[in-house]
Image (cartoon, rainbow over all chains, first blue to last red; front, side):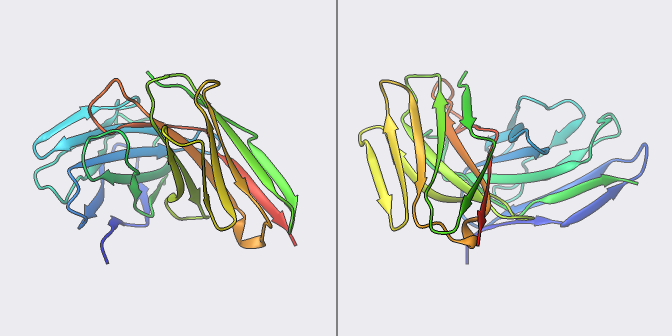
Length: 114
Length: 114
């Protein structure tokens, strides 16, 4: 079955540590997105990528970094500069960058501070 | 950019009753309006969507209505069941970009009491 796989499901970060969240899709989708979800605040866009080797900042990019070296992979690094990283992180994809299509989501990674 | 407001933030109904969740959007150029259901510990999943050339769409017990003049769209769930309990999100595209981005509402937590 095609879909988006996020790993790990749970992740713990120590002070001063960078951690990387994995997102892989086998849907052959062009565009991929990272969201942060906090209770009662909906989904906030961190970074997005429209095509391989290209990505743009979303609304809350500070303290995060991404890469898009392969079409199917869009890893997110939460750096030590992100002072409040505890949240549920969701990766999504769309077939193309046309605006009238649904987003397909993974099942998320829950990140906590040790 | 697009601004999406979703109401109510929480909704509790008795099994068998109907539930209605409403979203308003700001950009009159938006033309695609999906609804997502998120179960605990999972990513959001598309349950129904509507495009701006129709006013209503039904799929069994769920329906979505769109009022483009007033810039609002609503999710209707009839004959609710306990398994309908989840967080529901509406979304609207950001038509001023070419990135497939969407703005999400803050979510509605629906509880169906048996």
